[in-house]
Image (tube, rainbow, N blue to C red):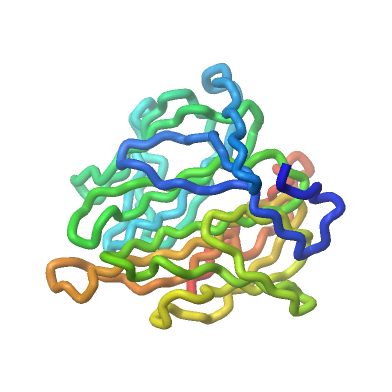
Length: 274
């Protein structure tokens, strides 16, 4: 294995253990992962339908001034209730998911994409789902998804949800610095185990047009975090929409749960965007 045992790692011990992939507008969780030595890890078998509660973490990376509503097809209800998700907003939903469930992402009366669940983990975990705008010239969505594996250490996944025409935004990474001032540049797609503590994150390299302001993040226990580059670039065309490159960090702070039976991941706070 190319990853380290997190129990013996320092606060800045970082091992790239998985890659994140984006597929088509109708997409499912894919638990086929690529380790740091590029060996494939087989996905677990399907669970009994609805027997395990997962935390579905949805981060809206769909660049638009209009919010997205999330509709759970099997239950004929909106996960987002009466308040759709704004661009760059993240929400966590505790759900008993079933294989083959459909989630429609809607912008008003327009359905921009549908996501289906397959290959669900056999143990309760956090599942990340991020709708992304496919093109600055259209409304169709694609999805980025990831299932966090069981790990006693806190983790942050580095996601690139920025879209651009041509080669714009192809390079870049996220720089993370711990309390001692030690820093490292993390490539997009990396999943990094971290010790408890406070960190500063910022977009690193690539285009000089993005914000390099630092975003604070505090880890606690086995908390799960997302550092995601968002935005879209129409390349100066008046026919498309452009949104600047920004870094979204969620959760920025993990609140300590008061209930002793609460999840060790704590409670999510609002994302930081800079």
